[in-house]
Amino acid sequence: MSSKTLMIVGMGRSGTSLITQWINKCGLSVGDSLLGKAIGNIEGHFEDEDFLKIHEEILISNNLPSTGLEITQELFISNDQKEKLKKIIDNKNRLHTQWGWKEPRTCLFLNIYKELIPKAKYLILVRDYKAVVESLLRRDFAYIDKDKLATEKKISKFTWILFRRKKAKQKYYTENAEKYLKVCIVYNEAIIKAMDQLSSNDYIVVSYLYLKDNDKRVFELLENKWNFSLNYFDFNKVYRKELISDATNKIIRFVKDKSLLEKAKELEENINSRMVI
Image (tube, rainbow, N blue to C red; front, side, top):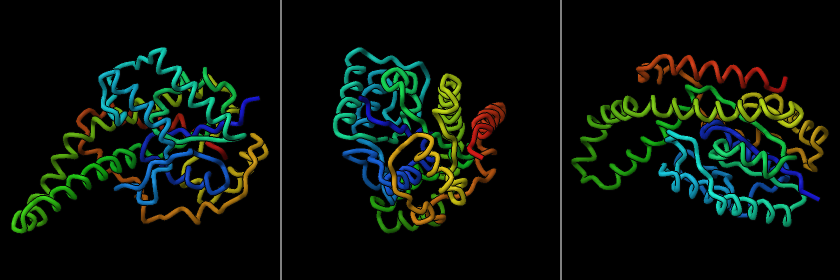
């Protein structure tokens, strides 16, 4: 008999790590080897490395960056890669009576997972698209800033901090905001397509903001609606407001094609309309 499986699905920077941490605290195994901490995820990514590695392999074989943040074509999955996915899933089922995972690139493979795990349940996460794009840009530039401060000589560091950093940040946002907005659109389109093919009984849509006040409601759905055996853990004990910024309109001025903003807004509203209430 197959194990109960929970897929935690959402675009990167949507609170996926935070919510997966909460699910894990409630007692669900979310991976036997988890990706560690990094800039932008100082509490840990809570990403199952088994799924991460195969997703990266598939993206690279399609001549795309392994980040999953540059999608320009439909992905081809070879029979060998499909077998690797089956083996990962079979191994998880063998080790656990209930399990789940979070890995943002999962959004790009929802069609194959529907085939491989037909009885899976989906916890779908949504966040304001402007906050997602701004968070991606902020995280990326933090790496650039860290590298500059680590490698530049003392005088150059001083110049970077006082004069060059602000200009470089403006340039980076200008060059990359639209690219990340397009990625956000691709991910949300994939999520909506998957929801349209699922029974409404098989997915729950939430946001980290919703969980702040309604974690017990979501917990009860996981336990009573889907029969996961869990132990309630207060979401607010893992939620740290200072680690998640609120949405602003800052990135709008960096997007030349305003139709992309309208498209992103439309998709977000579509997902939000299916949120738990």
